[in-house]
Image 1: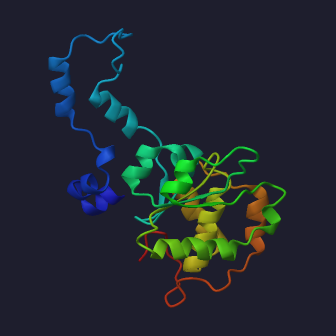
Image 2 (image 1 turned 90 degrees about the vertical axis):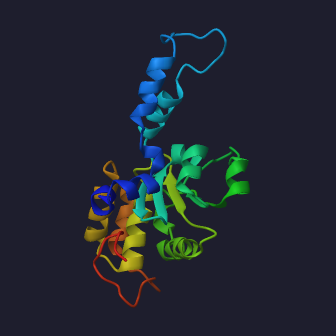
Amino acid sequence: MFYLKQGIESFIEKYPYLCLNFHERDQEGDSKPPAQENKPDGQPLLSPFESKLLYSLSRFPTEMVEGKIFQGNVYNANNKRQLQDLGIKSIIEFIDYKDQPIPEYKTQNFTYKNIPIDNETAAFVDFDEICKYIDDLSKDETKSPILICCKDGDTISPCFAIAYQMWHKGSSLTFASALVYQKRGTADANKHLYTVLTTWQPQNAGDNKGRKMIGFLGK
């Protein structure tokens, strides 16, 4: 959609890691020796172009609010290259690490918040407090873009993407759900959290002056 709206030059500028220069591939094909299954000298099996290709095909977080809020899984939160390319400055993880320590690089290099949620605690989630926290981060240029994520990226974090759309834009649950499901594609919202959303009435919502039934890309 961004490509169709802005053109190829803007797309390349915004998403350079998704764009491949096939001249590099052709030059590698002309210069490198035949591929080997194993390299005894310990050199990488993949050429630079092959590495770029593999990376461009990996699943990136879903951009929910353009340049501000991304929604993904724990792989995205642990992928330092993705975080760097997306410019992520804050991470909110809905993951219960139990007795395992939270990776230090997250707490040391990002504005980090861990909110452990499971089926038993879902009924006590304060959506208003979490949406307000997301909104405050998104307005601070030193703390956004933000990555919100859960273990699989498709069950818990989509519920908060839906909640934020309802809280920030005043969308109905049906409309907000349709937006998130359309963007994420594989979302399968946690039924316990989603049940809470069916009766939730957002309080002290964000964009009060011009709250309209528009999508995440709306201004």
